[in-house]
Amino acid sequence: MDGNLLGKIIISGILECLTGMHIGASKENMEIGAIDLSVVRDPVTREPYIPGSSMKGKMRSLLEKALAIDLGIVGTTKRRNIGTRSNEVWIHVCDNEKDAFSCPVCRIFGSTGKDGGKNFPARLIVRDLYLTRDSVSKLSDIDTGLQYTEWKFENAIDRVTSAANPRQIERVPRGAEFELELVYNVEDKAHIEDDLKNLKLALDLLELDSIGGHGSRGYGKVEIKYRTDGIRAITVDYLKNGDSTKIVICNSLDDLTNIKTLFGV
Ligand SMILES: [Zn+2]
Image (tube, rainbow, N blue to C red; front, side):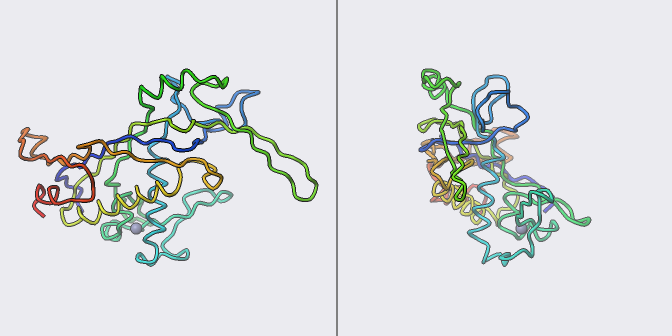
């Protein structure tokens, strides 16, 4: 509860787009005559990327829904508007550190205290996801008139007047692969098993949902391919002294035996 650190669990792999993905850029960045809805890009390389915040927010929302009944947060009690008055975004956030400590969602994803309640910093870090070098070279070759992306034409028809509202949406093409890295801070060994199970649940749910906009229309289906030996658990002793007995490497989050042994659970 005091923010002590026992170690880190690093999960790495590849996130592949199985369908075209649209994570929108802010409209302020758009040029005149540009595509209607453009994707977010690295300002230096101009390569599209997935902000860690987008992925983390989606994982949080999926886990929150899956655990809503267990948490007793169905309805709007224990939910807070983190959007604006005109664009409301209601999510579950515990009001204080003590509640967050025993909450499976806020414990992983963090909470901001309300009315003097202290913040509970997130235990999970989701890095920004950049295209693999292989994907950059493949996407450099596509001929769509856009850099690394495709555009999709969509048309909505007014049901009464039959007026059309055509628009072009920029997408990262299917098959694009991004480097994935998640870091979970081990702060309380009693929570390791539950937190990692919930983290895995959020990642499994993500594959059955979508990332980015227009998911209900087929966009943003992803698959996570964990690297062989892609899960590393290290203790603070390993970081301080390089003690090689204080690191374990696993293939999946399905069997946590070695990780639990490492932290003495
Ligand atoms: Zn909570």
